[in-house]
Image 1 (tube, each protein chain N blue to C red):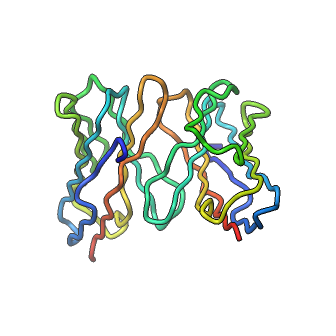
Image 2 (cartoon, each protein chain N blue to C red):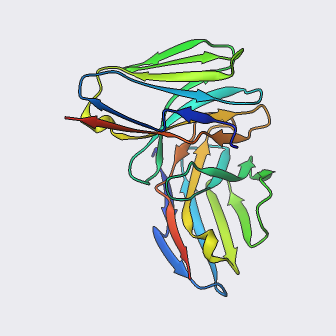
Length: 110
Length: 112
């Protein structure tokens, strides 16, 4: 299976609620990144967290990284309909190889 | 200019055709990437160029041939593809490898 596995595969929430997605990976990493993709188009970078960091914030996004458990989580607070998209974690190794997780499809209902 | 452009947006080709995908960025990034993405699947890394040199080839079949003519351009030459190669091909760039990547909109390829 791929380096990154995400859960849940799909998440449906109401506008204003928080959304949490989790990512697990298997090998040592240099950093972990989260991306958003709308309807099979190009991906948009959201946030990067390095292997020596534990938590990072950017606007309504909060990312945590636990290298001992090889896992990360993405929290989107106060969700909006415009947040509806697929979200992928991507690990980057010291050799420069990127591996994407299977993704979480988020639906935010107005 | 903070975008990655890809041409063409759509491409339909036969199994005997030769075609090329083109990717361009003018952000001064020194790493460029090709990914393949099938429907409802994550992007899969194909190639990485760092400082115009091929640094990673993820065991991609030789019918896909990458080329990096200069630091702003990345091509993917296609020859004798199979129907299962139909996918969205995404190009990305980053300031250096391992850093955050900027993605183009992709080329949707259909092989008949």
